[in-house]
Length: 292
Image 1 (cartoon, rainbow, N blue to C red):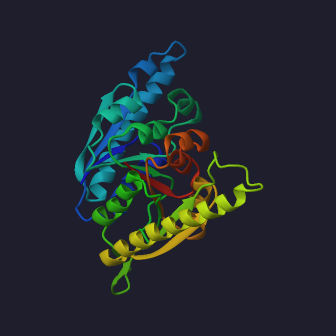
Image 2: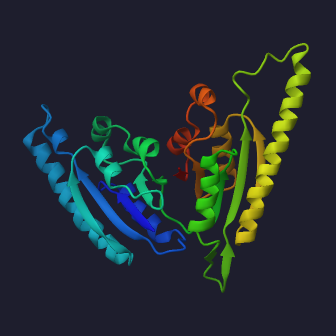
Image 3: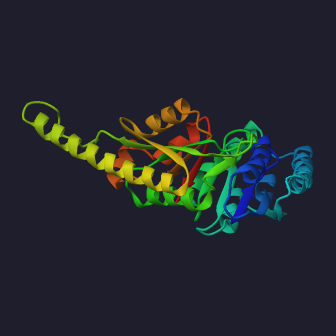
């Protein structure tokens, strides 16, 4: 698998490379660590010479440390620097659909983040491949929360887990231990549903029972595929706000990683409810893998 790691010298960038080394890939990854130096930003009207020298020196240190970390982790790959606007350059170099893009959820100092904007959010929206947003230190993958809603994107998320990750991990105590996957399906209250009074109550109860049954079958199919592949798995079906329920389930299950599709609901519902994947990637306490 081709992996592009976007690094800016921050702790999150270092954690990202550790995540690549720790994830139980079926095929050993080939890593390109990319550091982007935004020359146009450096030439801004309010930049002082000492500040420019500071950023350039930090860039040189980042390249050196990343090369050392790559070697220490025994990962095959290269480290490269490019110039330009950060997000567009990363997107240009991102692997295609069979690869993975890894980026930290935070980086640099507060002023630089304000000037550069949220790079990780732009990558989630526009990358041609799955995006791993790193939120913390890498740990052996033990528990995954996999969100599914029946959409093509969530089907790809399930397929990514099945084909990219080994189903078990070494416990260090004499044998492999299966990775546990909690498959969650959240049934959102439709923003356009009729008011629940009078004659509409029966219609809504009927609709919710049908939706619940569809969700149950969807979960059963996903769980069965995971178990057949060697994972352990359990179904979770809930009503409510999808982003909030997914994050709450991940926290309760002590998940190391949330995996979900980049798109789900219909267009109108997305406008009214907001982007679930973006919200989860921004506010979840564990790392998030968004698959498209």
